[in-house]
Image (cartoon, rainbow over all chains, first blue to last red; front, side, top):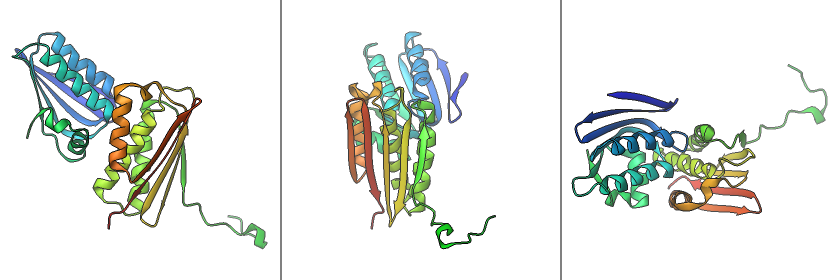
Length: 112
Length: 132
């Protein structure tokens, strides 16, 4: 498992088990923190991960740039074929509301 | 402390608004969100409405990040209403899907919104009221 803290208010860890990658994010995902978040997710897919689990339980804020990262990640795993998939785990509170406003709660697979 | 000797030197009431000038850099968006949340809390907005104000100011400032000028923000709160005004220059994020999504999000969470980007200048003003 690797840990990264790209800003004072955002950190994430990455764990890989075969073709499944799990990213656990904590804090605020905004224009400042999303580039490194995007890079980590894209890196996993480029490295052969086909199933992504992104845990957003401890994310207190997400903006349009964060949504863009997750939509991009969904597209990338779907490009991998039928075995590709992305699950968002633990989405709640203000972050869930942003997904609902954007209509993305109907696009992603959400789990508690 | 100096005591005023004439009526002309009587201290005036503190202004209700707060101004904040930040670099047009994404690293300062959090500072804008903090100021917005504080103003919203002072006028009695609930937790969800405070989150709305944080999101709105962050998205609008993000549209101006990356420009050469700074961003000047003014936060006012009175009678259960928050008014946030900002001015700067359009940043690269104003174009494209993310810029469009940002505006969709802001329009959904505030009561009134005006955003203009003309001739290298960008300004916004939005309000959020306490729900009754």
